[in-house]
Amino acid sequence: MSDLRDDVRTLFTELTGRAPDGLWSAPGRVNLIGEHTDYNEGFVLPFAIDRRTIVAAGAREDAVIRVASTFSDEVVEIALSELDSARGSAGWADYPLGVAWALGRSGADLAAVPGIDLVIDSNVPVGAGLSSSAAIECAVALALDDLWRLGMSRPDLARAGQLAENEFVGAPTGIMDQSASLLGQLDAAVFLDCRSLDAEVVPLGFAAAGLTLLVMDTGVSHSHATGGYGERRASCEAGAAALGVPSLRDLAVDDLVRAREVLDDVTFRRVRHVVTENQRVLDVVRTLRSEGASAIGSLLDASHTSMRDDFEISVPELDLAVETALENGALGARMTGGGFGGAAIALVPIDAVSRIQVAVDGAFAEHGFAAPEVYPVRPSEGAARDS
Ligand code: GLA
Image 1 (tube, rainbow, N blue to C red):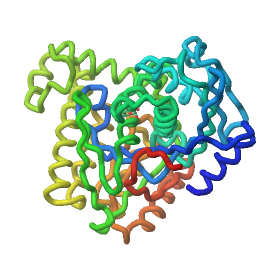
Image 2: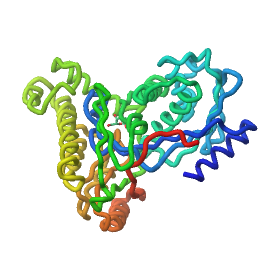
Image 3: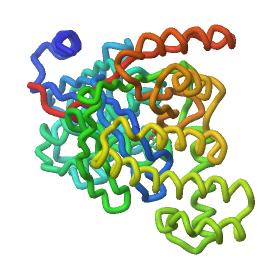
Image 4: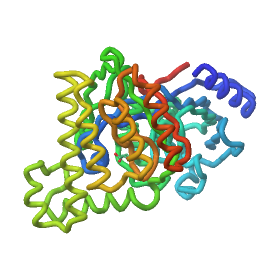
């Protein structure tokens, strides 16, 4: 982290000839459970991880926003008044630019605020399903909120990040990732009701229970701006409409009997995933509170099965990682995030970590899959001003 801070400070000074006004940072996230439930107004249980994006930011005298990063040579510069016509055209810089645009849509007067220089660095792995994009959005949102003196609440900043992603970048994602990044706390998960945006902190206590959470990054790349993610969302909305409810959040497991009669097989299975997944989130929260983390494994496994068979968003690499981890001592395992690639997670006893790493590496090699990256993550603090 201190290296990242030094890098952004140095680059900021090279770019602007002055020191930044401050440094802000925001983490990526792992979703413990509650997949594809957020845009159905249901429940999620993500936690912020110990991988962060850092932003050095400083106000300018003009009305230009300029974005640079330590991971690309490109410097993007645009007048705040031109942002609307630049939607979706700047590659990775769409995320920070989109946040400035979204804050304009959420009450900031872009004609009155100063321009901004932003320099970004990150150690959140890109493409792993750990929300590297939300980490950028949230760090930038916090920086602009401070420098533009907007005084927005964290849930409102999360909504602005989601708006940036939906309307500026063009990915029809939900509110989970930004909420985890902004609301996360050390050693705890964020239990979020995606309808009311009420959030509760749920202690995880992995380390105290002798457990570690392993990320198993398959290296299979995915994008939520294209294809499967949007199709799944459309199926959920079609299912809710056919059943006469505002969203799938309004269905309980008992309603699935009627759903099976009304819906075609594919839509029914999409609906069944979301309805049972919402219930599993509630069950995991209850189990964490009553028995602790070592008792949630079978609920994680059931979530994976539901995503593999009903929601059909897993890939062979994710299934192999999950199966191999379970065969080698994991208490529970599931793919995490939007699916179609990215990472799976496994909840494992600390003394099984290296066995599982070796076994997953070996299984991937045996199947001719590219080498995965398997590493522990810690539930960590959410976004903050660092200096
Ligand atoms: C992606 C999206 C989230 C959520 C998950 C699936 O991470 O950004 O909003 O829908 O997929 O749970």
